[in-house]
Image 1: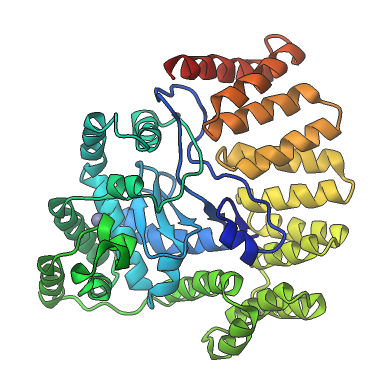
Image 2 (image 1 turned 45 degrees about the horizontal axis):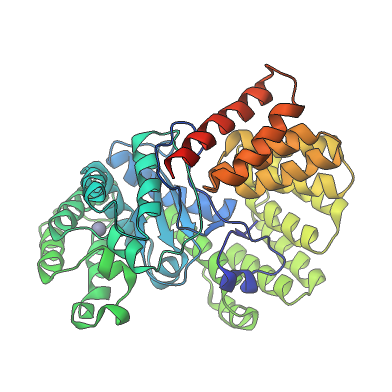
Length: 456
Ligand SMILES: [Zn+2]
């Protein structure tokens, strides 16, 4: 399902979705931050993230990385931008995905960001950060990045918004870094068999923006300064290619699908119904129409459309996930459980689908099964604040206040709120069996939150 964490505007566009500050990293252990933070509202959707993984897989491989090491996540922001904060995640704005026309352009963005990672540009940023530590407003974000790069288990979170001037300047790369990341991107793209013309097209989209004032530029232009030299270098690289790059039908499909789903949830439903007719792929057209009907509160039509998409791709768990979302949001709990069960059978390793199943099971009165599904989701993705929230609620309902307090403390810890984390961790430690694994987890939050508070 599509769920939006943060950002009021998109909440308005995504009816009935919970608004929870997104978080970035896993546990609070080892955090050395004076004040914790994170700047992002994330749009979490198993289908879209799967599509991004399909597009990034060959590029990651070319860069000597794997999709287990680096994932691509969508930031809930209508502007054009992409960036990295640590070695594990490439963040791409929803607005960028909607504004590029072809898979190779999006893949060029991802390849370029990976180039920043593999060229060690995050380390340079960390060094700058040490000098800028006293800059008001920046400390928080910097703390996040420090935790992120210093320790894979380091942690954090707090909604700031990627538009603030401090964050923009923090995300900015130097021109030398841009040239290096482009060179890496060219190599990764051509090795992966992806047309490097995508990089040229990406640059051309910004040609001319250099002459605009900062306020009129896309944020991407500020975080990734473009010079005519970069455009020329990319054009030269393309001109020098001896191999030809055939279109990749699988990658083209997933690009159309993730873009189609994102636009169906963000554009007006009537726009979608009008434009979906031109969609190349029948199942994607049906999925887009289904989302539009759902948003127009026309459930029978939404179900008919998604069922027709499923008939074209009967082994596609993500379409069942979407059907489950429709049923869940229209309070058809039992039918939602059935759809999510099928989804998680077909896509068993997707924590977002497991979480959907868990919520549906709880709503349908299958409390123990629901708790187990939510725990399974959390075990696969420690960064989903919404799952932690729902788990705490489930434990509270089931008369396990110690576990509820533990999950709440961990959620606050991840959100970068040590004061709140401390209150709930103390409660958890009092209530959980001494020495048990959950008690130990509460102790970890307690110790780290206390450490954090002292630094303030
Ligand atoms: Zn860049």
